[in-house]
Amino acid sequence: MTSTGSANDPREEIFPELTRDVIARMKDGESKRLREIMSLVVSHVHAIVREAKITHDEWWQAIDFLTRAGKMCSDSRQEFILLSDILGISMLVDAIDHVGGPGLSESTVLGPFYAGQQRELASGESILLREEEADPLEMRGRVTDSEGRPIANALVEVWQTAPNQLYDVQDKDQPEGHLRGSFRSDAAGTFRFRTILPVSYPIPDDGPAGQLLAAMGRHPFRPAHIHFMISAPGYRTLVTHLFLDGDEYLGSDAVFGVKPSLVIRPRLMDGINTVEYDFGLADERESTRVQVEELRRQRR
Ligand code: BEZ
Ligand code: FE
Image 1 (cartoon, rainbow, N blue to C red):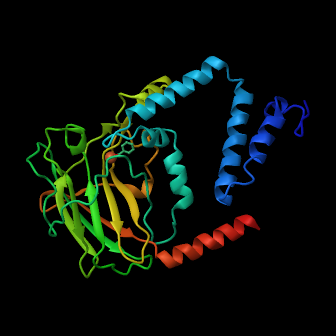
Image 2: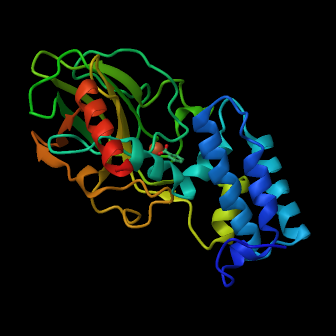
Image 3: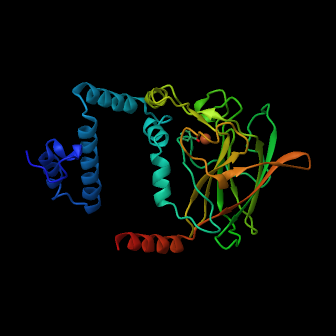
C-alpha cells in the first residue's frame, strides 16, 4: 500500500488508492461542479471512515439511520432539513450564499414549516384565524434597499406557531392558514399586521433527528420567533426571523439560527406590545457583483 500524505496522517494511511480511484472515475461526468463537490464528499467521508476507524456495525447503524430518516419524510415532514438544521449545515450554507453588508438585514434558516404563499391581507389585519389566549402584538415593518430607500409593493410573507407550540400544518385542530399571511409594502415601504407574541417550541423530535439530538445530549427547543420571507423584483429574497428578547433558548437554539441583529424587544405603544423593524434587501445585480468579486478574491 502506498501513501502520498504524511506517514502520521491517519486519513492517508489506510487504502489511499481507493479514494484516488473513486475520484478518478468521475472524470467523464458532465458537470464540472458536480465532479468538484463529489470529489470533496468522497475524500472527506473516506477520511472520516479512516480517522474514526468505522466498524461494519457502525456503518450499518448509519445506513439504518438514513433509511429511517428517509421513511419519515412526507408532504408535511422533512427529516433531512431537520438534520441539516440541527447539525448547523443550513446556517453554514446561508453564511456562504447570503449577501450581507451595511443596510442589509441578516438572514436565517427557512425551516420546514413554510407552507407556500398565503392569502394576502390588508395592512393592519390580523394573521389569526381563531382567538388565542396570548398577548397581542403589533408588527410594524419597513422594507428598504441598502441605502434605506423604501421598496414599494414587496411581498412580505409571515408565519409563526400557536401558543400550543405547533404550526397549523402540524396540528389538525388549527384552521389551515392560522398565524400565516402575506402583505404588500406601501409606497413608503411600510407594512403592518396584528398577531400574538410567539412562544418557544421544540422542533419535531419524534424521529431520527430527535434521537440524534438526544444522543448528542442536546435539547430540541427554538427560541420564540416570527418567520419572514420578503421578496421584491430586482432584490434578493430575504428569509429571516425576528426573535423575542429574553427567551431562555436564545443562546442554545436547536438549529443555530439566532443572530443578535434579529432579536427584538417589543415596546408598549397605545397599550399594545409593538415591534418596529426595518428589513434591508440586497439589490440582485449589486449582490451578484459582490459575490463575483468575493469569488475572484478567494481564487487569487
Ligand atoms: C422553524 O423555525 O420553523 C424550524 C426551523 C428549523 C427546524 C425546525 C423548525
Ligand atoms: Fe419556526
